[in-house]
Image (cartoon, rainbow over all chains, first blue to last red; front, side, top):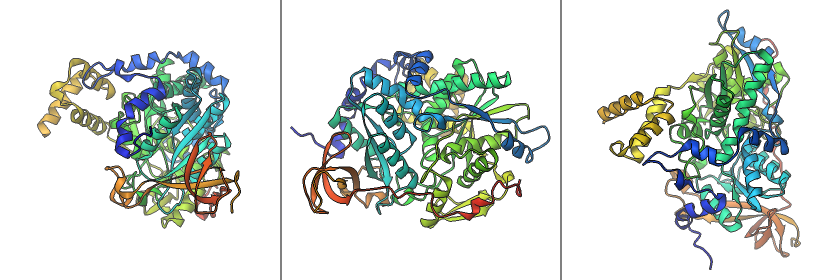
Length: 471
Length: 92
């Protein structure tokens, strides 16, 4: 009997398909109306950090180099007050098998899929994650299907995603190319149902566990190189998994450095708009994912998201498209490292934060990504021009998303801007209230929400009263 | 005529505009939701006809034959002169 493949019918089978494709029952972790036992869910996946590192070493993941960017640091110091300008280090995650930190995220899922006897893996990703799953699946003898959002309705492909499709095919994966829309999730479910493959969601405990090794490694490498701990770690924020995993790994290494998120500001552009799709020069690491996932992580393709970034975030910096392209070019010219622009989002954030920090302090940029045709700042800017976007040098604050990209004339114009963390936390709280009326929250729910906001119970009570007064 | 076994790309409308998810914005709602995938053509066929292909994961998928031996043309783009002078010393 053939199954109903309408949008509504497939979405209604979501939980059943999820259970079959991951072998994970999320119901057992429910502890309240809102709350679930996050740490138990993370522990139950059964991998210690040592296991993760061992498994990753089997498939060319991890132990990536860390470099001090002395020339860039010196350039930054010329743009700030005497005594300021922290030492900038970068962890060269492009050295992982598939060219980005996402290999860490895919590695444990691939291991689990193999152990559980799945024949293949399915990943919904237009980015580095798809290539990472394809690379890991290839090494474990698994088939792989990557489902991408790649074209607008005029069949114009975003160059960065076209390159990712090529890379996935290079690793032997089938690439399903879709037009713009959130229905990608619907088709992903259909493919999982049809194939019985493992669901390599980005947001499972396996995906996050795999990134813990990154935080752990970077702390040890900095200690080895400098004899001290980093003061801040800058992490590109999209769905929140990069930040969550890295921060958890840092805590496992007993490091309490500031955890700072950074996204490209794409405000004004709609993520599901066919028109806006090819007027964005960044396909990830931007506010279209970064902010919604920070203020309500349980919007992912799994019942409970293991990536809970607000739990670990101390600050959140936004940078402009033109600023990231400028810093990407500087990385090539000053440091002799050519890396992909999306991965340099956090590098751009680090430039802005380093200026406020003392010169004996250390800031770590925890990733880079590979670059190549399509996945290059020149490709993106050239494509933007073709799409009618003005590209010029000048004051980057004059750039209007979807209309113009203004590349700074001078490093001093790379400033970014900080988001108000209190506002973000209140936004999370409002979302929590929308899901379950606070009058129904138990003590367990309250403790869970407070922890998800990286705040204590008195903060929660006070904030709830404020919200009540506002209504 | 395209020979069986040729590497081709097919296209298929998954959802018509009326069938699209309720939450999509207006401009997206006006266009169909389209899927494209590459695979080996199962039987000799004409371009733009309905065919089946075998994909790299071994799935059999049907759709309209739109491309023969699809290839990649993405590049580094036209030279963006604005980038060339960055980092040469003048502005820092």
